Image 1 (tube, one colour):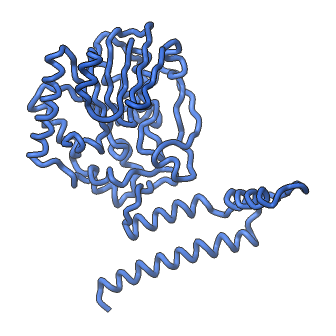
Image 2 (tube, rainbow, N blue to C red):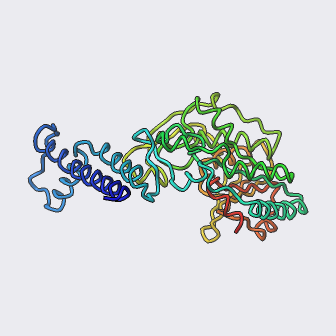
Image 3 (spheres, rainbow, N blue to C red):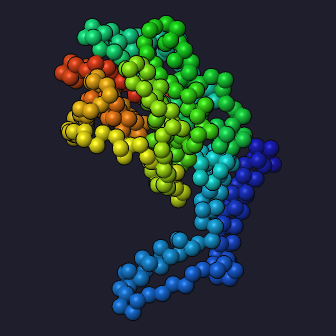
Length: 347
């Protein structure tokens, strides 16, 4: 048998053996060695309710349920390298978006032409704003995989590139223009010891990670703002299912809560569903600047901090809207676009 065919046969045999083991072992334990809480029904229970209750009971008490789910994703990713949406980490409750791995290994670097085109587009946007007396600040949240590579499987972790496509792009823009770009990768990595900054089973940063990023970007927006260090703030924590990866798996994400509950309590909120715009006015804010934010989902965790520190925050989903800028005439435009979507600037 050809070497390649033998290798393929081994993979198929290994997957089949693991599949049948996952079926047989929990079933044997269910009927024999595995202790389960007793299940009782009310005498007037409907058949439909009884069946639903039995299904929930079986799912909740199935032996090694979490371990089986984790092992399944491990098999499909490490043996087959199947194009699943996420990569299971080396801890049961950690996962990463698969599309961010190419950036981690440096396989999606921008070409010289792409970097020039991105710079030209940003300079055109910056020039448009400067003519109107408006400052442009670009925020690029790092991919979680760049902040927590230690939770990747070791065979994937060792392929980390010396520089990511995003870092190379930021360096290029800084070297050839005066455009303000905030890419707080270093600040986030330096503060990991304080606590979790991203959700283990989600691609987004949490309130704590967003706070560190806000402390950094606020320096470019208004120098008069003084943001306390994260370790000086009161934080509580609860477990939630959240976002793109968190909802797909059975684990909960530690969710830091705290200062957002005391922020902007008297702020006035208006929302335009058709335009996907949101406006928050806080007359008691420290900064009197009017901020217009174009953003993706990473900005959600930053909202309380903008609402607290700035007198007016106008939010609009996704790309730059020049007509909206002319209509609103803000003091500062913040363009937030997460690292994995930076290539969309070319569009």
